[in-house]
Amino acid sequence: MRPPVHSPNYNAYIESWHAQLECECLGLQEFTTFAEAYPKVTQWMEQYNTVRIHCRLDYRPRWKCERVLLPVWPNGFRSECNRLRSG
Image (cartoon, rainbow, N blue to C red; front, side):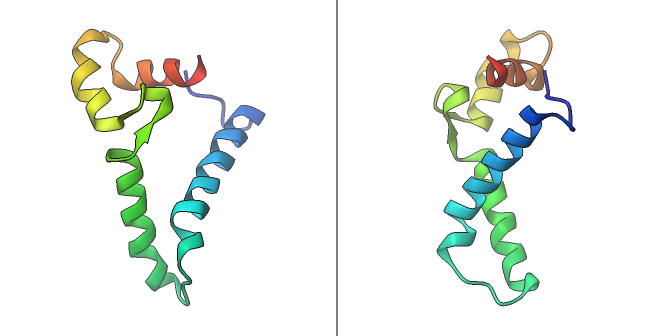
């Protein structure tokens, strides 16, 4: 289940995500323009969502969790990942 947008729980998810973005991408280099930062941030987001392992997904990258476990979850991948995150 996804936390409501205007809830403290949602804020915690967003703050955690921004902390990771700062630590793993923005904090490692200095950008002088938005145009310079945009491709690097986009690349980091792609890596974060596909390659990076997530402890809430049993230390697997999201794509692997989706591919391996999707047939087991009748309610779909998003539903189950949201359940894992909240639990």
